[in-house]
Amino acid sequence: MAWYAYGYFVWTPNGVIHSGHDFGPTLDTYKVGDSLGVRSGVEGIVIETLSLEGSLAYAEARILENANHPDYVGHWWPRVPDWRGNLQAVWRPTPSWLASLGYRYSGKTFGRLENDDFNGDTYGGISRVSALDGRIAYTMANGTEIAVGVDNITNDRAYQSHPYPSRTAFAEVRWSLGGAR
Image 1 (cartoon, rainbow, N blue to C red):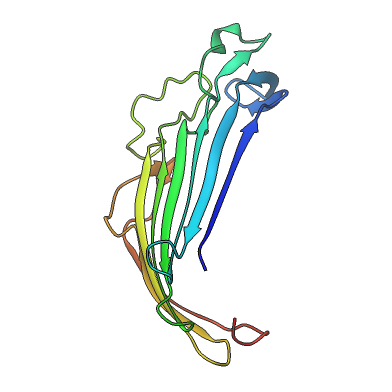
Image 2: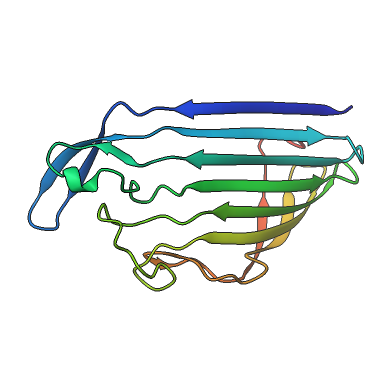
């Protein structure tokens, strides 16, 4: 059976507090702009055993008002990317087998209220994130799931003050108390 889901959000913060320690403890209140986004999913449209899910969000997280630091007005709020999204395809050829491929993206952001971060692609910086992940899993009749996968298949470099993990292979075993799912 095919299904399609869609949702959206709009977020308007009514005052955001930022605590900084550049020259001693400070606590300021800021007014930040709106964020909006969509989330959707489809299943069984092309192939009955294939589902696609994704989300996309845009944040206009600019500082609109601050009495203590009017020079920050118009700057981007720290650590909130302008664009963020993901897309995942899940294929279930049988009830026991699952294969998935997912893509994650997070756009440019700043780490400081001053927006003076000039090199996000290095240790201490904040860069864009673009990663492709894959996983194959088998669930046994008793509910035990065995899986293998690779995160960041393309080995893209990204930083959030420290380096994100490079290509990472993993294996996992999971057991459900409720039996098979």
